[in-house]
Image (cartoon, rainbow, N blue to C red):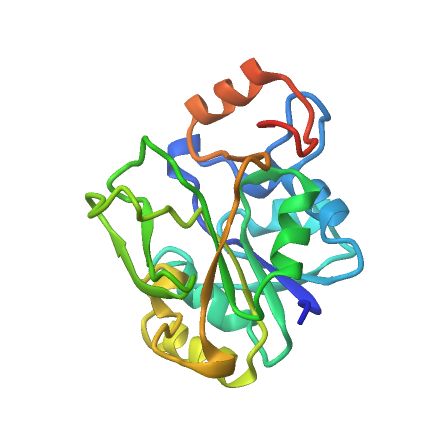
Length: 231
């Protein structure tokens, strides 16, 4: 099943980027802001952006999008932001700090009904979110901190959930545990239609901008967002 809508989580303060709103970061080659880029790669989907910190800057820059406002952005994590926007419609969820090849979204859409994008990365921070994946591709555990096994991929922050019962439970968990990262609130024990699988990024281009060093690395690559290499 394909997602019908997308939720972009953009309420955070971006402390490591000197307080710059991540959704407004411009790609050094194309000049597109993150939300411009998402408008292209999510074409055909209804997009809801959850804003909080410096919300007015994003609202006035993109007046045609749908928005949800997290007034408690200082005190909550992105789980609470997601809880404000989730409903029972099949949904893609993205953090507001990526530049990626369009094929990343198509891979998620063509994948299992309930899926988490996974990436094999050697260098990870202690705050990275890691996955334990069974042989059948099912995710059995989500954790942060030291990597337990070289087999455990990282979850960059792109999800698809289509099962209605899973969406209802995810929303409830996000509201009840507002300080958590949204993926930590996604139930993983479900079987059958509610099972959650990992979808590998492979060699598709995906750059996440969390720090000035991330942006400098993107500037130095200076290549396109085609699928054949890093952006």
